Amino acid sequence: MLSAKSLFQEILDDDESFALFCSIAAGGEAQGGWENARIAALVPESQRALAPKITRHGADEDKHGRLFNALMKKRGVRPVPVPPETDYTMLLERGGIGLAHDRLKRDEPLTVEDIVTYLAHSRVTEQRASEQMELLRKHFSDHPELGRAVRMISADEDNHLAYCHEELLRFAYAGHGRAIQRTLRASALAEIRVYRDVSLAVMDRMGRILGWSRARAALLTAGIHAVYVYERLGGWRRMVSLRTPDRHNALGGPESTAPEFA
Image (cartoon, rainbow, N blue to C red; front, side, top):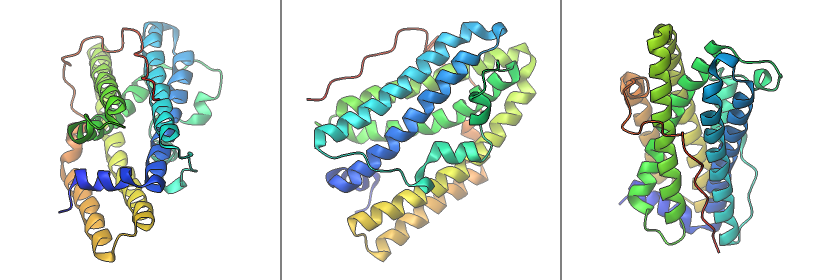
């Protein structure tokens, strides 16, 4: 029977597919770390109180990248180049979602509108990350090789999502509500397209590595397209709602330490 758990298990059990999975994940986390570090450095003076939280966000992402690299090292496999068509963060940036890297490379302070754009983009992508890690935590929280990393990353992603809700609500109360909703909607609709395309590309690569039959590959492809149809018809709305989070000041404390993998 084909299930999310059996699919992930098959990918994790093979060294080549495991290396590709971890390399893609590590690359995306490292990119997120860089982006947050640059945003923290360029926060406008009126929003300097946000800088430590943005820095913490970036530190968490860097930590996640180190965790995925440590998992590869423990397995005895090396990182592999990330195929461009599977690079989620790069494709979002190319699609004009979030703050452009050219803007972040300049040593010019960001505007309040830029910070709103960053938070709205993060609210959408962190929704996806939180859901994906919740799925992994559901099936692999007790896994001897992955369990500790999965639990830690999942908790961090939940904190990141709570932080985005809290800060966007603060900006909404300050008069940026329309801009926030406009940016959230554009980000969500772009993200679901990128997620579909990346999912198809990753499954194609994994299928070639693992020798999937045409029938199995077709079934997985149909499933990915079905998820996109659901999200396009209304599922995207879960990415744009705002609510007071249960976790207040989720990024207000120190970064948690990554576990060591012997």
